[in-house]
Image 1 (cartoon, rainbow, N blue to C red):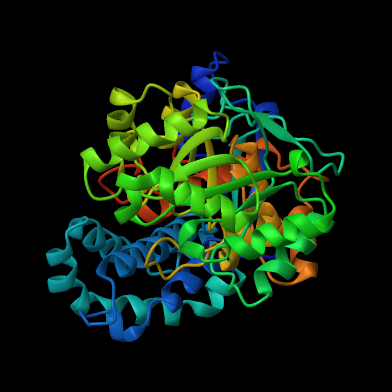
Image 2 (cartoon, rainbow, N blue to C red):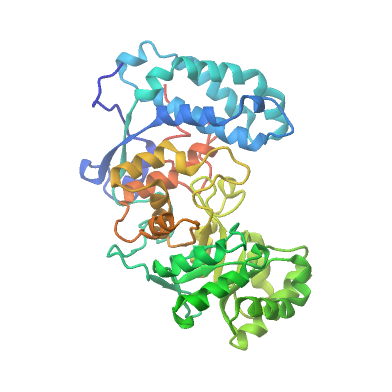
Amino acid sequence: MHRAGLLPVLLWGACSQVCRNGGSGICSEAALEEIGVPFGEAALWAASAVPEGCDAPGPQCSWQACADAWRYALNNLRLAVESASEQDKSWLPIDQVHQLHGFMSQLGREQEMWYTNWGAAAPTARGLIADLRPWLSSEKSGLRVPRADIGTRFPTPGRRSVSVPTDGDKSSSVTLSNGFAMPVLGFGTWQLPADGTTYRSVLAALEEGYRHIDTAQAYGNELEVGKALADSGVPRGEVCLVTKLSDVGDYVKARARFEQQLQQLGVDYVDIYMLHSPGRSAEERRLAWQQLEQLYEEGRIKALGVSNFDIAMLKELLAFARIRPVYVQNKYSIYQPGGRDEGVQDESLMEWLVQERMVMTGYSIIHPEHGGYLSPMEDPHVKAIAARHGKTASQVLHRWLLQLGAAVIPRSTRRQRIRENGNLFDFALPETDMRLLNGIVGLLKSDQSGTTPVWLEDVYGASEFRV
């Protein structure tokens, strides 16, 4: 075992390339920060998250979730053994880890390949990780990362975070490209039942200083949202009220549905209104958008947006829209940064939105990717960063997205959690931690074929095979 407190240090090529691109010629010590990273703990955690019954095809199993979790586990395992001390390398089964990692890489991202082949390799993977559990539980590696680079070309050309207040003020806002000022901290109401729970939760959020409330036709709780807003005593003009057209059958009669939603909410306008999904066809999207444009021109909507759209769908919309969307609401997490398949896309949605002057709001930041087995709240890399700052994993994840230039809409039914989720403005994440959080999706998607997504810098070295 290596002695406690001595961290073997990895300095990956991606890091060196950043320094060369910066014009310094080499990575100077002053430009780097050494961070302890829990590769071993992450390998154990990810492998345990996959149900053993899903190592082979099953009706309750997702091959993609299985592949992602095992890729995450084996990337962390490989990085743990490769960064071990020379003493530990003398007995660690590095060749076996490399063989297993190489086999995983050959499976790629094809469902048939995983279903046909992984079942035979899974017992070996589980047995290897079980044998190494004592070492992996105590293993800590050191990683040197650039101090002033977050590993992505967004939210700023200089690869730096946006400036988010740290004075405790929850009222921080971003000005959308049409001039509307939207508070970056919102309160989400998805899955809050309309049995008094939504009313109490929204009222508590408003009392705690939230000034952005998000709901939708599909949530079935607009009546309680409106009642809470009316009873809060907060002037209507101080609250950004956001809702969505959800039922695709209503796209052709969007105006009529909007009128009904206004009645439910008890207001005469909404601040942001959006299509909740791309719907069923381009023609229905066009018809719905034209009606939304009319409502916008009448002053009954202050800003238009969409939800669950990818770049292709947004480009289609821009081709016929007279009034451009200024807001996009998608799932955004460390494993799914902006869209369902964002981790394997050649182009970053967030970078594209910055260029098009649209603002992202991320939902379900703390939850697994769609159908995934891994929870961001339990990720050892996230928990390590949270521990360094004395914050919860939820606070770190929401602050991360704020510093990427997006808005957040956490939700809870408990006042304590509502307060905790709102306490995002009394600390800041340094660029090194931003880079580590941005890079987590690379551990989930990369293998020996290269860094995935391609728009991400490989801070951990997940695609760099080292003996």
